[in-house]
Length: 193
Image (cartoon, rainbow, N blue to C red; front, side):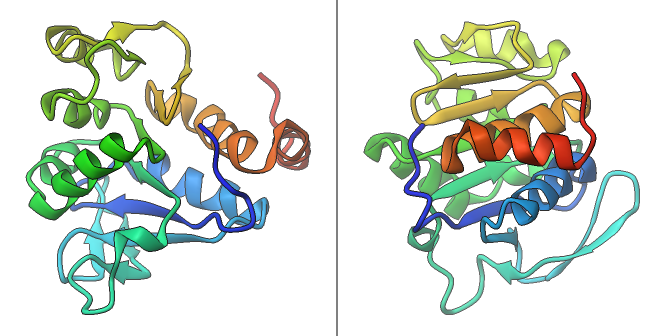
């Protein structure tokens, strides 16, 4: 995935019941790297409760009159249950994901969220990973399963789950600002693999 770092702005889509670590780790790491990032609610409500009852107040809502997916160079889908089914049920998001794949624009998904892409028919012939017990969904829809904690295939980045959230966020930083910046952030947070 190639993202113009000067124009990079990331949308982390937030649905009721998301896995908060998978969403907020990305937000935190991108912030540390100086990459603008908005948490975006998929409903008109800015306050969203995670699967573990953590309340998140989002920056934006897709229901805002001035909201435009085109303002974002990258869209990130956190997993969680019922967060993933809630994201999957969001029609404007599904339409945007189809557009992004048609245009080769970057999309990233972690944990169960890659199943959304699979069920939309967007992963056929693409290398991907997800939460291990959800891998059959990817396989049923033609994805090429990769065992890596983070898998990058062109405009697509996928990751396995909460335990790989730091790797996922660092990969996004590397894709936007380069490996040197990802390494700097890794050292700054005392992250050792």
